[in-house]
Length: 193
Image (cartoon, rainbow, N blue to C red; front, top):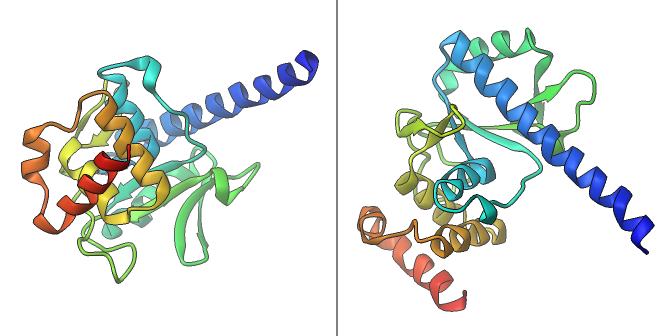
């Protein structure tokens, strides 16, 4: 049994390292090219959680980036130079590594100022609602990240909110920043946690 776990653990470590390399390649290239962006999703949650407790950081399998639609072509040109190519997969824009273009583990693009789904109550904010993380890349600011997680409200988003609550990042100031229609969702997570 131990022998079987070691290769599985090794593959998991390699997968985490691959996501980190992809994140840093993406953000370093966008920074160098002057393309405004903000990291969102699981990597943004991890960056925020790490400010309080690095041991509570959860791994993720892909990278989510917030871009302005008007900057997509400029981003695509810059990223093609580091072997990340723009693809459209089932209506989702994404940057995939040229050598192993797997949509499950690529860079998913969300557009600033737009809704992901028509039924979403709020659009994503602009990329200017961001700040530098300890790791050096731009990450969506905490109140906007919480808002977007509550808008999406998939199970993974709820888990991310639980992680932020667990380390004490969702304080009264964050709660006051939320639109009234999202407060019941936050309360639902708090009471089922």
